Image 1 (cartoon, helix red, strand yellow):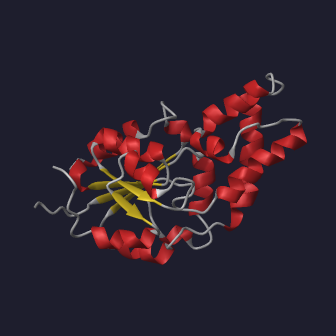
Image 2: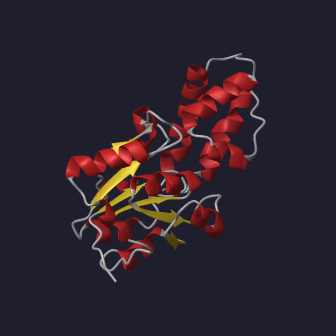
Length: 221
């Protein structure tokens, strides 16, 4: 059986690197202050990429406000709510990063919000070579294009690259490119759902990644 050495790990942001469930939910709830309703379940909200979600909220409110305005209001709220965020298992991730492994981040959140979180509360000790937000996604339902971009940029062997996320779409995106899909149980999807979407590894916490860095054996070659 072939064993691979992981050389790059790409991460999702919300409910993967940071426990942001309450922050996003509250930013959507706060739209009531602008006379807007969001008649969606929590899972529907989290299953809809950010920009399409803003457009959907505008549509369901008969375009009372543009999606661009709604996006700015939620961004302002998230700036406030994310202010105390600390990356999950920060010190353990730093130890993994110090092994010489590339770290990148691909999020459906705004790059501005992501970079704000990464720059304070000690999070700045963990370095990411690349940070992509929803502004960088051509297809907001898939991160496969940006995963492929990173592979091409650094000439990684995709068999040695992980994408870590909490959603079924994260797993599908990773599978499409051929990198290792790692599902983390910090979000709204359970292990059965993540495995069905293609997850090869399921972890409860990010610190568990260290078990797979030097001796990962893929399910299929």
